[in-house]
Every structure is written in C-alpha cells, then in structure tokens.
Length: 77
Image (cartoon, rainbow, N blue to C red; front, side):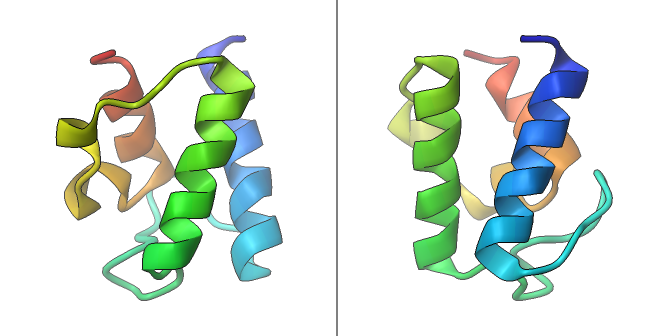
C-alpha cells in the first residue's frame, strides 16, 4: 500500500466516522471532529488494513490530529 493509498483510506474512514471529508492537514481531534471513541475506531481500522499494531506510546492526540500526522506517526513503526 502506497502512502497516497493509505491517506485516501484514512480519509474515507474519517468520512464514515465523522460524516465529513477532511483535507490531509485538517485538525481531527483539536477541532473535536473525532472524539476518543472515534479515534480508537480509526486506529483499529488502520491496524486491520495495514496488518500492524500501533505501539501504545505512539497513540497520543498530537500524533493523530491530522491525516498527515497519522502518516508521519505510522512511518515510525
């Protein structure tokens, strides 16, 4: 899966969770578009799609506040 494919996947998952299409740099958590439950749902979807487990120490609001930040976080795994 390319990074662009992953960005599009995350964008589509956010659309399902928040009913809004977001840009890659748009705030998800600080803007309150996603809450703690929907962030967990998003993380589970990403883990299942990629076949990985995101380490607990990387699961912080600032690492998941935009699609770009999520991609940056995933590149550390």
